[in-house]
Length: 147
Image (cartoon, rainbow, N blue to C red):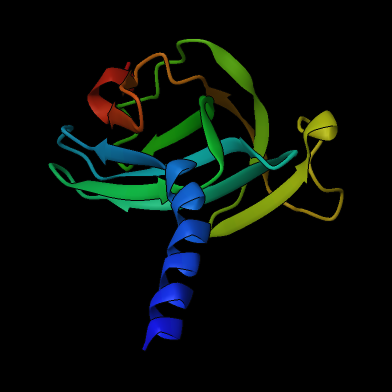
């Protein structure tokens, strides 16, 4: 019994630092159009690029990004209604997106080139100037990005 308690405390001590590195990202779509979101973020000496997070009109979702620094999260948004375009606040760079779900990593020093074998479209990602941020959370309202 005492061994189980000690093992449990040891495991908890190992997991707490991982939780501390997690950033909670809440994305809300207040537009009248469905949208899909791709993210790019620096993690563990790599740039991760992934999508799509699909949001219906008036829908929101929360995801956890582990090992991420808030200032290194970038976004690309595509609204189903083509009349709504993402307003670029500060261009962070261009990364490759694909039509279907995707996730890839590349060393930070080559972050703009992307993996040579990856096929897709190179598009601009924006910094999160539109994010409201507190200590461990990021909030993105897609209406702020709609131009």
